[in-house]
Image 1: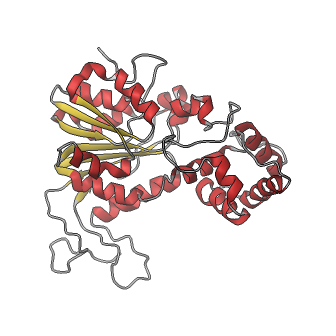
Image 2: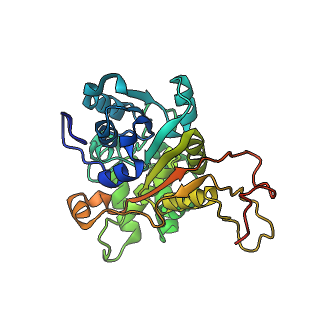
Image 3: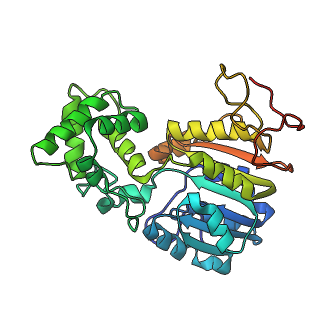
Length: 338
């Protein structure tokens, strides 16, 4: 039998697997969508929970999709793989002839397999071209192309906003100076060394000084935060009553968007306190199952250091009717401000 995360090649241990199964509850049977399939560890757990489960696995990385399909081949027609962005979940289900799902899972961010594949350019542990695209079939720019084109101010903004790097302006200035000298940054080691020199001083952090910069550029080139809230809303629209959504994030900005969106769809106004009338469209269509984010235990964090920043949030869809016009003051679910 296929063990969750097992299969050919190197072992793959999906983050927060037991907690994901607890909140997703696949033993109920039905259709589940793994919107970020990766190597299929979570999907295997869903399929093993009940012989009545079916999984549609979506991933924008065609190479990962191929490996996951090989690992899940023993489940036959109960598993279908689709090459697409998770934001296309509505189209994927429509083309599959499906209208409602029992559960949806999205494990955001870059996978360990992508980080460990040197030529993908995600990690400075290997010397490789600065690519970082999750979908290499996509026509989006590589990180190298991005750094060769963007003005200094925009590079600084990306590194500060997505990487929360305080020295973003200095790093951007060094990148642009190299470009002006006719020596643009095109490799992972080159960028990592440049960032380390730009920051200067003694290393006091446990992480490499280029970690935040690499994270920021990866998020930018893959447009990871774009339409994340819209994806959550679409996924909930596609759930049947009592269906469940599980979101796993690894970045504070991702988690903030997930938290805010779930609160709004649980009927809690998330408008700024100075706004006199609710304009956020809050409406009670879900029940939040995780009042606080679920994080890996000590054993998992020690075994898989990359899992340490993971946060899981989950909700259950209520049996209510949701409209697209926003909050109706006459509705039973009208929202009180703050």
